[in-house]
Length: 442
Image 1 (cartoon, rainbow, N blue to C red):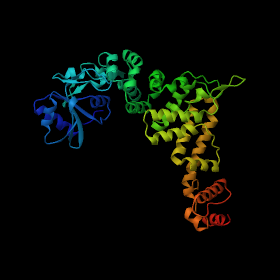
Image 2 (cartoon, rainbow, N blue to C red):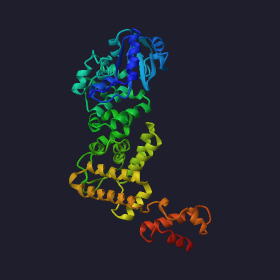
Image 3 (tube, helix red, strand yellow):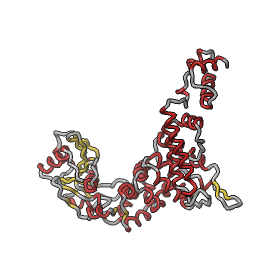
Image 4 (cartoon, rainbow, N blue to C red):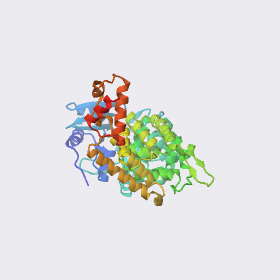
């Protein structure tokens, strides 16, 4: 499938070529178009120098986003285009950006500095391609291959190690043999990459449809920045519920989860505390008592280290902490957990428990999966029927408690908690008159 080039992008290309400069679409927008995916970012490379690029677009809004490195951003017809002068690059002392760039007149020299062949294809406005490194062939074959020497590419910018894994997981491509070897051998370059940048690539990796394959093949890369994973990789689980070791179980749980970041992070980290909690009984059966709490503490530390936002971190830690909790398939138990977690987190927890089971011994989990489906159904009915499961659902509130003679302060909250407990336990109906009578009798 081919997608139309936005009119603003066409205009930028036409302005440059009308001024006598070569100009091509390049990078991800070309790659995605060739893959039949609608591009979201538009990059253009040109023979014009930075000051010449600016001069071409005096009638449009231009932002000097990276003028030192030859890049300006042009806003045309509501579309942002990054326009960069052809360039070659000096050494990457910081493992992120080149120490200097040299502006050149050769498109091929510019493409030679790029990371992977599929990102080193240039396209003219008429659709003709310039592909000196065989990127189109690699796209057809589903292969990720470095431009030039793989080790050099990775030593230049350590993030490219994670980008290779993210592309493999997101596109379902195989990493070419020499490139794959260089990924393993140069994972130490991640030490020079900011946590926020690793975070972004890891998120893309985990939410990719082939995340499991990447986790199996490149666990050593993840262990480099999250060494807490390493004991899980070698963990054996001699237990009737488990037919796989700790890492394979984790991967299967990740694969079973929807491609939602919170759920996939949760499944990656839910058993991270197991190695430290392992014990073996007299029958040779392994147990992992207390591992959910330990896993939650470790997950919190790991997510903080990679600068995850508080909302994501708190939700993942909550789900990890409760992933092994037993929720009886009874109305009042379900309502208690709905009130404790809130509906969104509750249904996420049910999904976590489901996919956790999908990574366990199939013959043992059929009954559990059926029960989880019933719990989910009952929870949906509780919400649909407007049943009380939280303080906000009570037929009375703090003002009613105070009006009934309870002094403002902590006692108000304790009174409401007691009323909620009676409603959840079935001792009384969530009826305003009845609840006010109970308050008066205190």
